[in-house]
Image 1 (cartoon, rainbow, N blue to C red):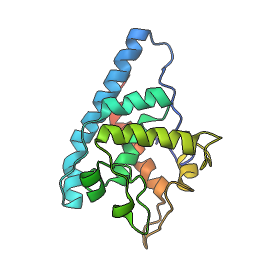
Image 2 (spheres, helix red, strand yellow; image 1 turned 120 degrees about the vertical axis):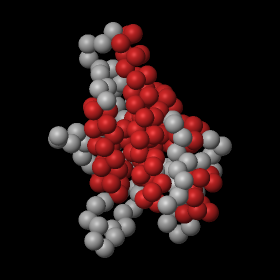
Image 3 (cartoon, rainbow, N blue to C red; image 1 turned 90 degrees about the vertical axis):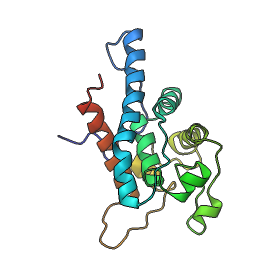
Length: 189
Protein backbone atom coordinates (compact mmCIF):
# COMPACT_ATOMS: atom_id res chain seq x y z
CA UNK A 1 0.00 0.00 0.00
CA UNK A 2 1.53 3.37 -0.96
CA UNK A 3 2.10 5.94 1.77
CA UNK A 4 -0.17 8.97 1.55
CA UNK A 5 2.06 11.31 3.57
CA UNK A 6 5.65 12.48 3.34
CA UNK A 7 7.56 15.29 5.05
CA UNK A 8 6.52 17.70 2.29
CA UNK A 9 2.77 16.95 2.48
CA UNK A 10 0.63 19.93 3.43
CA UNK A 11 -0.64 19.80 7.01
CA UNK A 12 -3.55 22.10 6.14
CA UNK A 13 -6.78 20.08 6.00
CA UNK A 14 -10.05 20.59 4.17
CA UNK A 15 -12.72 18.71 6.13
CA UNK A 16 -15.24 18.64 3.30
CA UNK A 17 -14.92 15.52 1.15
CA UNK A 18 -16.34 16.07 -2.31
CA UNK A 19 -19.87 15.02 -3.11
CA UNK A 20 -21.13 14.62 0.46
CA UNK A 21 -24.38 16.02 1.79
CA UNK A 22 -24.37 17.89 5.10
CA UNK A 23 -25.69 14.81 6.89
CA UNK A 24 -23.05 12.58 5.27
CA UNK A 25 -20.32 15.06 6.21
CA UNK A 26 -21.43 15.13 9.86
CA UNK A 27 -21.42 11.32 9.97
CA UNK A 28 -18.00 11.21 8.26
CA UNK A 29 -16.46 13.59 10.82
CA UNK A 30 -18.00 11.71 13.77
CA UNK A 31 -16.75 8.42 12.35
CA UNK A 32 -13.27 9.93 11.85
CA UNK A 33 -13.06 10.93 15.54
CA UNK A 34 -14.29 7.51 16.66
CA UNK A 35 -11.66 5.80 14.51
CA UNK A 36 -8.90 7.99 15.98
CA UNK A 37 -10.01 6.77 19.43
CA UNK A 38 -9.98 3.16 18.21
CA UNK A 39 -6.43 3.70 16.90
CA UNK A 40 -5.37 4.87 20.38
CA UNK A 41 -7.05 1.85 22.02
CA UNK A 42 -5.45 -0.57 19.56
CA UNK A 43 -1.93 0.85 19.97
CA UNK A 44 -1.88 1.68 23.70
CA UNK A 45 -0.68 -1.82 24.79
CA UNK A 46 2.24 -1.66 22.33
CA UNK A 47 3.32 1.76 23.63
CA UNK A 48 3.12 0.54 27.22
CA UNK A 49 5.19 -2.53 26.37
CA UNK A 50 7.78 -0.58 24.37
CA UNK A 51 8.27 2.13 26.99
CA UNK A 52 7.55 -0.10 30.05
CA UNK A 53 5.16 2.53 31.43
CA UNK A 54 1.42 3.11 31.50
CA UNK A 55 -0.01 5.29 28.74
CA UNK A 56 -1.98 8.34 29.80
CA UNK A 57 -3.09 9.24 26.27
CA UNK A 58 -6.87 9.64 26.62
CA UNK A 59 -9.48 9.09 23.95
CA UNK A 60 -9.49 12.52 22.33
CA UNK A 61 -10.73 11.82 18.79
CA UNK A 62 -13.66 14.23 19.06
CA UNK A 63 -11.43 17.05 20.39
CA UNK A 64 -8.90 16.45 17.62
CA UNK A 65 -11.70 16.61 15.06
CA UNK A 66 -13.11 19.82 16.58
CA UNK A 67 -9.70 21.49 16.27
CA UNK A 68 -9.09 20.05 12.80
CA UNK A 69 -12.43 21.44 11.56
CA UNK A 70 -11.98 24.83 13.22
CA UNK A 71 -8.32 25.44 12.30
CA UNK A 72 -8.03 23.25 9.17
CA UNK A 73 -5.11 21.30 10.62
CA UNK A 74 -4.77 17.67 9.52
CA UNK A 75 -6.21 15.42 12.28
CA UNK A 76 -3.78 12.59 11.45
CA UNK A 77 -0.94 15.05 12.05
CA UNK A 78 -2.41 16.18 15.40
CA UNK A 79 -2.64 12.63 16.74
CA UNK A 80 0.72 11.60 15.22
CA UNK A 81 2.43 14.57 16.87
CA UNK A 82 0.83 13.72 20.21
CA UNK A 83 1.96 10.10 19.95
CA UNK A 84 5.50 10.98 18.94
CA UNK A 85 6.09 13.82 21.41
CA UNK A 86 4.59 11.96 24.39
CA UNK A 87 5.97 8.47 23.59
CA UNK A 88 2.42 7.21 23.20
CA UNK A 89 1.30 9.04 26.32
CA UNK A 90 3.94 7.40 28.54
CA UNK A 91 6.27 10.38 29.08
CA UNK A 92 6.44 12.11 32.48
CA UNK A 93 5.57 15.41 30.78
CA UNK A 94 2.36 13.88 29.39
CA UNK A 95 1.52 12.10 32.65
CA UNK A 96 2.32 14.91 35.09
CA UNK A 97 1.54 17.99 33.01
CA UNK A 98 -1.16 16.85 30.53
CA UNK A 99 1.30 18.04 27.88
CA UNK A 100 1.10 15.58 25.00
CA UNK A 101 2.99 17.77 22.51
CA UNK A 102 6.11 18.55 24.52
CA UNK A 103 5.06 22.18 24.27
CA UNK A 104 7.79 24.43 25.68
CA UNK A 105 9.93 21.41 26.66
CA UNK A 106 13.26 23.00 25.76
CA UNK A 107 16.31 20.80 25.26
CA UNK A 108 18.28 22.15 28.21
CA UNK A 109 15.44 21.53 30.72
CA UNK A 110 12.61 19.56 29.08
CA UNK A 111 10.63 18.57 32.16
CA UNK A 112 10.91 21.81 34.14
CA UNK A 113 10.31 24.08 31.14
CA UNK A 114 7.41 22.07 29.64
CA UNK A 115 4.04 23.78 29.83
CA UNK A 116 1.36 22.51 32.22
CA UNK A 117 -2.25 22.01 31.05
CA UNK A 118 -5.34 21.33 33.16
CA UNK A 119 -6.48 18.61 30.73
CA UNK A 120 -5.51 16.80 27.56
CA UNK A 121 -8.38 18.59 25.83
CA UNK A 122 -7.05 21.98 26.90
CA UNK A 123 -3.58 21.00 25.73
CA UNK A 124 -4.88 20.03 22.29
CA UNK A 125 -6.92 23.21 21.90
CA UNK A 126 -4.06 25.49 22.93
CA UNK A 127 -1.18 23.77 21.13
CA UNK A 128 -2.98 23.18 17.83
CA UNK A 129 -4.08 26.82 17.81
CA UNK A 130 -0.50 27.96 18.48
CA UNK A 131 0.99 25.63 15.85
CA UNK A 132 -1.52 26.93 13.31
CA UNK A 133 -0.85 30.62 14.06
CA UNK A 134 2.92 30.49 14.70
CA UNK A 135 4.05 27.82 12.23
CA UNK A 136 1.43 27.35 9.49
CA UNK A 137 0.39 30.89 8.61
CA UNK A 138 2.71 32.86 6.34
CA UNK A 139 2.53 35.70 8.87
CA UNK A 140 3.49 33.37 11.73
CA UNK A 141 6.71 33.99 13.64
CA UNK A 142 8.16 30.55 12.80
CA UNK A 143 6.61 29.93 9.38
CA UNK A 144 8.79 27.78 7.10
CA UNK A 145 5.92 26.10 5.24
CA UNK A 146 2.92 24.16 6.56
CA UNK A 147 4.70 20.82 6.20
CA UNK A 148 6.64 18.53 8.53
CA UNK A 149 9.85 19.70 6.85
CA UNK A 150 8.91 23.34 7.54
CA UNK A 151 7.80 22.60 11.10
CA UNK A 152 11.01 20.65 11.74
CA UNK A 153 13.09 23.82 11.28
CA UNK A 154 11.76 25.59 14.38
CA UNK A 155 9.32 23.35 16.29
CA UNK A 156 11.74 20.53 16.94
CA UNK A 157 15.46 20.59 16.40
CA UNK A 158 16.67 17.19 15.26
CA UNK A 159 19.10 15.26 17.30
CA UNK A 160 20.06 12.46 14.94
CA UNK A 161 20.92 9.44 17.04
CA UNK A 162 23.74 7.14 15.91
CA UNK A 163 22.28 4.42 13.72
CA UNK A 164 18.95 6.26 13.34
CA UNK A 165 18.76 8.06 9.99
CA UNK A 166 15.22 9.35 10.57
CA UNK A 167 14.53 13.01 11.29
CA UNK A 168 11.85 14.24 13.68
CA UNK A 169 9.63 14.94 10.66
CA UNK A 170 10.18 11.42 9.31
CA UNK A 171 9.12 9.91 12.63
CA UNK A 172 5.92 11.99 12.86
CA UNK A 173 5.23 11.11 9.22
CA UNK A 174 5.52 7.38 10.02
CA UNK A 175 2.78 7.79 12.63
CA UNK A 176 0.62 9.76 10.18
CA UNK A 177 0.86 6.92 7.67
CA UNK A 178 0.05 4.31 10.35
CA UNK A 179 -3.05 6.30 11.29
CA UNK A 180 -4.01 6.72 7.63
CA UNK A 181 -3.68 2.97 6.96
CA UNK A 182 -5.83 2.24 10.02
CA UNK A 183 -8.52 4.65 8.79
CA UNK A 184 -8.51 3.03 5.34
CA UNK A 185 -8.59 -0.51 6.77
CA UNK A 186 -11.54 0.49 8.95
CA UNK A 187 -13.33 2.01 5.98
CA UNK A 188 -13.46 5.70 6.78
CA UNK A 189 -15.69 6.95 3.96
